[in-house]
Length: 258
Ligand code: DAK
Image 1 (cartoon, rainbow, N blue to C red):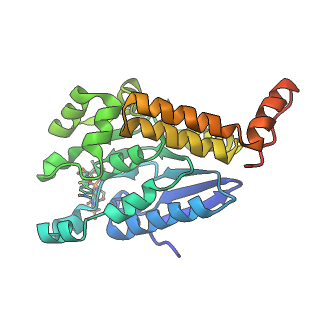
Image 2 (cartoon, rainbow, N blue to C red):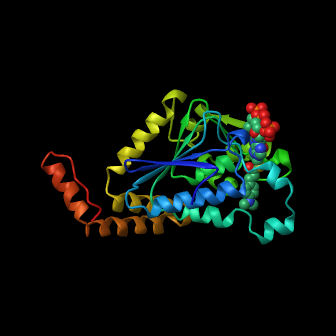
Image 3 (cartoon, protein in one colour):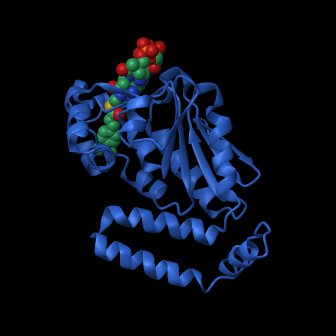
């Protein structure tokens, strides 16, 4: 599929997906969401790809769902077509790690998209917000749920109810992002993290992604049991043997995803 709203590059084992609607600050319209779901799905299927990075521009990761496109929709349309559901479900089915590299605005659906990734590395220029309330609507792709789990009820309510923006320092302090780096170094730092992940066994990175995500979906007791069983199952892999042997032999492991 040729993309008109994305630029996709594969650098060694990392797929770099860049949102590319500069005139609309990367607002998420139907075309972009379809292309993004496809690009992530292709990267997930591509054996060469071991980690995915999703980014925007220096000014905006994404300024939300496309207001122009949304403003023309009726209740019957959004309800019957189940607006954005298929594409977000496809994005979330990806089993490989996805890092969001956020500079500038990550608002509304843009903030939600960043939170759908596995972790967020932010530039010091990043601004997060759920300002849908100013449009007479509310978050619709997980914002009330994911932001609340990440930053707690009080701050989540504050963000959703006032529509205020959170800067990068506050986002790091409150657990929304894993680290903040100078804007000029954002892609260098994110790509270094992605290449580091790409060196690991894909079997292990997939197991970790699945296990951490399970903590959102289940009780702690069930989650720990799930983690323990996945841990046990990794002992059936050659990569477990290689990782431990390499440590004991004081050398770098050579993982083969087996
Ligand atoms: N949609 C469409 N166009 C947008 C846009 C957006 N969200 N954000 C910015 N643009 C466009 C502007 O209209 C402008 O276009 P022109 O006028 O030049 O043609 C261009 O991008 C540059 O924007 P500004 O001139 O406004 O730039 P500034 O630097 O002055 O301001 C800003 C930047 C980010 C503060 C401002 O653009 C802004 O407030 N944007 C809107 C932010 C926002 O309200 N985001 C939330 C959107 S609502 C659901 C799924 C998803 C959602 C809900 C439900 N379901 C599945 C149920 C999500 C909803 C949302 O995200």
